[in-house]
Image (cartoon, rainbow, N blue to C red; front, side, top):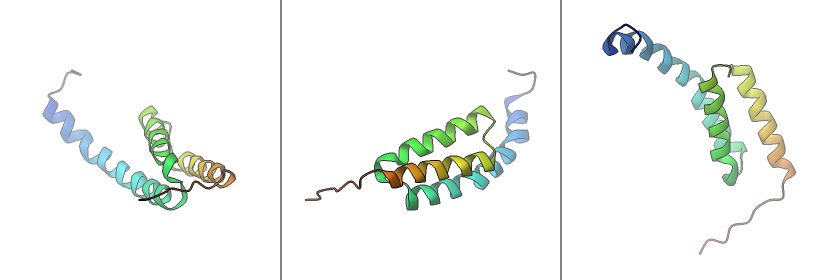
Length: 84
């Protein structure tokens, strides 16, 4: 532990972390479900989560990343799913 009780640590960091997540993830998921093909959605979420965990994932970097992913997905052939 870091010299404080777990309750104090939770009280001091929870609200900030929750607020930051609310600023990032609704936009990521909205873009993910509307722009990214089904087979790449998990990859997009994993990349954004990795950047966020590294602490360097600012909002502009995430926007640039999503633009690159959506651009790359446009270049691919469409995938047809046979639903029975």
